Amino acid sequence: MRAEVRSDVRNQAPAVRSRASSAVEVAGLRKSYGAVQAVREASFTVEDGEIFALLGPNGAGKTTTLEILEGFRTRDAGQVAVLGLDPGDRAAGRALREQIGLVLQDIAVEPYLTVRETLARNAGYYPAPRDVDEVIGLVGLTGLQRRKVRALSGGQQRRLDLALGLIGDPRLVFLDEPTTGFDPNARRDAWQIVRNLRDAGTTIVLTTHYMDEAQALADRVAVMSGGRIVAEGPPSTIGGRDAARARIRFALPDGYTAADLPLCDLPRAGLSRAAVAAHGLVTVETAEPTEALHELTGWALRRGAVLDRLTVDRASLEDVYLRLTSDPGPGEPGPPTEGSTR
Amino acid sequence: MTATAHRTRRSNLALLWHQVRYEQLSFWRNPQNAIFTFLFPVVFIVILGALFGHGTGSSYFYGLSTLQYYVPTIAALSVLGSCYGQLAVMLAARRQNGILKRVRATPLPAWTYFLGLLAHCVMVSAVDVALIVGIGRLYGVPLPANWPAVAMALLLGAACFCALGVAVASLIRNSEAAPAVVQLILFPLVFISGTYLPIHSATLNRVAGFLPVRPFNEVLIGSFAQHTGLDWRNLGVLLAWGAVGGFVAIRRFRWDPRPE
Image 1 (tube, each protein chain N blue to C red):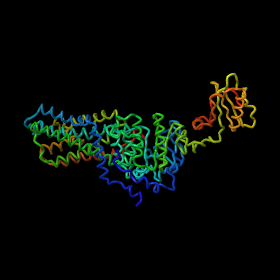
Image 2: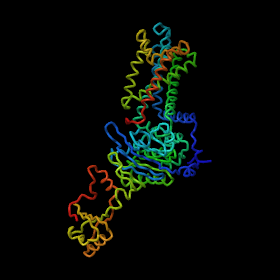
Image 3: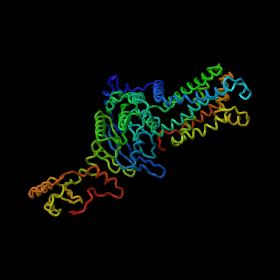
Image 4: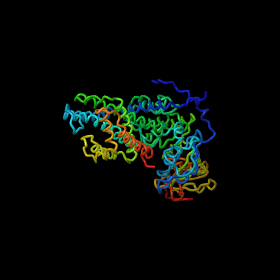
């Protein structure tokens, strides 16, 4: 049952929201804890209305960076502007928090209030909150309005946490590992919620360990490693992904060895490398996948052989990420192999 | 009219009322906790009444009957328990659970949050004191004559001990240690301040007179039983401690479970 009418503030909001400046601007950010330099030198920009993902291994400085943007931590050096305000300025704190929504890593909700009461309480903190029942529907907690928080499952509590981040109708939402612990269906749901928010004009900054999440959601990603931003760009091109060679993979047909493959007949195909993994899967890296694929499948058809488990892909975001974040120099992406290299 | 006009903040008072309501709702939704909060002083005064009820005045109790003495000191103890003890433990637990950090993530001003807690502590104190005075009445202890003085003493005492509770919560690192630290400070203080037994050592009384608990006992004994109105000298000591607590709280209070 929906007691309240949808607020018309959201319909008017985009006109107010459009701003020339970026949602988040960070330049030369630095933060140390004692002798530990958590953030050494971070600079990046989040544009208005985009989904921006901060990637990096544990201890890379993601959460520290996020908490500085959220106003939880002070910084040692650098410039930070969030919606044009300085999160380090206590006097601007209330104005900033009225416009941002936070979903923190750990669930923290008081156990004895109901779902609806928890949201209604927080809604009262904001000048123009969203409708409580609308937000409950948005995160998929419809029907649980009257349930006490402590009776919710872990996943439901995280949904409530997300709802608390959205109740103030924020212009900018920070999500710190928003889907950790979700089952696959719940993750898809959460992704759709985030996309819908972006489509409604909200800027999203999220951190994640999941490369598929960054790939599926983010308009742009920044990879953090050792307290530095080591790469920044759209997920499809970051770290030279778009320039990388395509990978053709298939199982070696029975009775053939890697030497039988027509790979040396491909001088114009820009073939760089073929490798046979221990489990019999051949990987061919090439700048000309169309031609190489034609040669390979033609070869197999002529012999009545089957290229089992045949796939063509490019270096995944995860491959690029692993290369960017592996500490002792850039390593070569690709499967661990024994076999021939050309 | 622009959308900005919709984004007007509600008044400070309305926001405070909102916060007080939900803080109360949160408390009453946990009936076990609520019952035990109020049961402790009740059990205490019932036992003392059964032991010493309907007695006459003695010089040991400054001319008061035994229960006439204990009604104000146990009332003071219940205020200490709810404002200083429970508040410190609750804040340490809420910080550890990340609830305080979540509060900090919203635009709710810190002073509103703390006033909401103060209102809660004053409510608990008022109910406790009413129960203690009511049960005392059953044992023949006359009701306080000067209610405005009693109310003022309780309000100021609650505020000071809340400030000290927040201060202690600011200095405690983890919530597991909180009850022990709170008790370690409270127990000897209560003992030397004449809560359980009147102290007739001039030296001890002079020392305890500079600490927060004895002045509060004196103020309550005065306004409950001796009809002396407000004892401003003792209230002054109490308010000074409240100011110290407030200062420490403002300087050292942390919302985040992890250190900066």
